[in-house]
Image 1 (cartoon, rainbow, N blue to C red):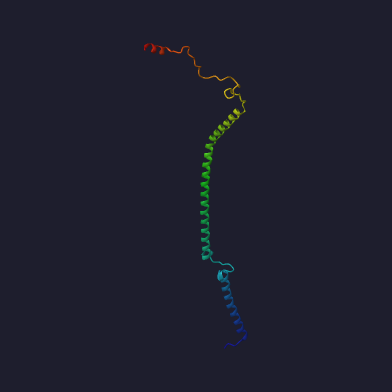
Image 2 (image 1 turned 90 degrees about the vertical axis):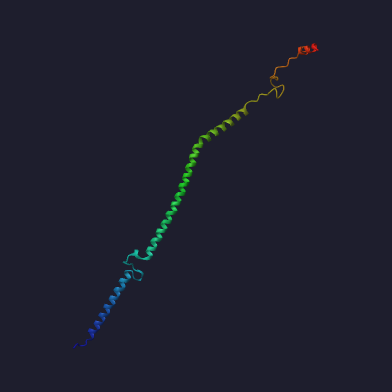
Amino acid sequence: MATYNEDSYTSKGVGNAGLTLGIIGTTLASGVLNGGLGGILGSNTNPTATAAYQLSTKDTEIAQLKAERYADSQVKDLAFEVCNLKQRVAAIEVAEPLREQILQQSINCVANTVNRLVQPMIPNGNVAPGWGPAFVSPFPPAIPSASTSTPATASTSTNG
């Protein structure tokens, strides 16, 4: 028969308790370290498998697509403005010689007017009598007749 030894029982109980606590501790520690309790200390599990990661990936993708759409619309608007500016520059280049010609004509007209205004004035005898030559009519003077009767009137008086 086995003899009862207090020391062996006690040591067996402590050993069993220690082993049990060790197994429980290892299990808990590996659970916490590998994603247990929400992965407080990090985890060995695949982060892409979590719903939060997939949701954030989709949100990032949506934000990127919105940014690209906005950038594309801005580029389209800028391209339209550049096209309009090119057309305006081309129209200005075409109209520039015509504008220069019109400007030169205006300058010549003003110069001619100034030249006429600065010439000395010569008085006209027709406007102010006594100033300049006498008036000369463009029509020849009428020649007075010497006889009062004309040959045509003389023949009518003899016939009658």
